[in-house]
Length: 63
Image (cartoon, rainbow, N blue to C red; front, side, top):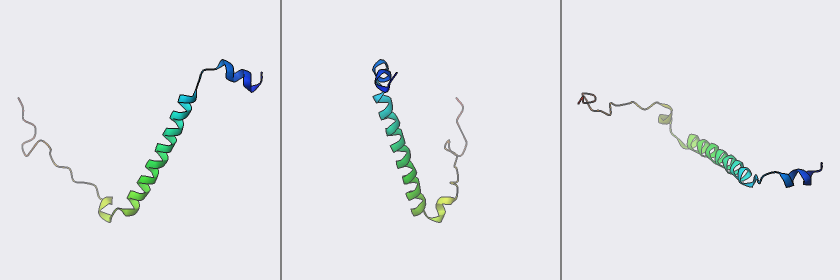
């Protein structure tokens, strides 16, 4: 069986190929954004953010 025979019986995978290409582009863009952010962030970006109690000083109200 040659390559043309194999392609004629299969389903259209162009949407899947496009999806993979878009996912790879997004991955690369996110990696580049992370590099830029790390390069421009100050030293304070390395410290964790102190969490505060979102429910207020007394905690969640019980009903």
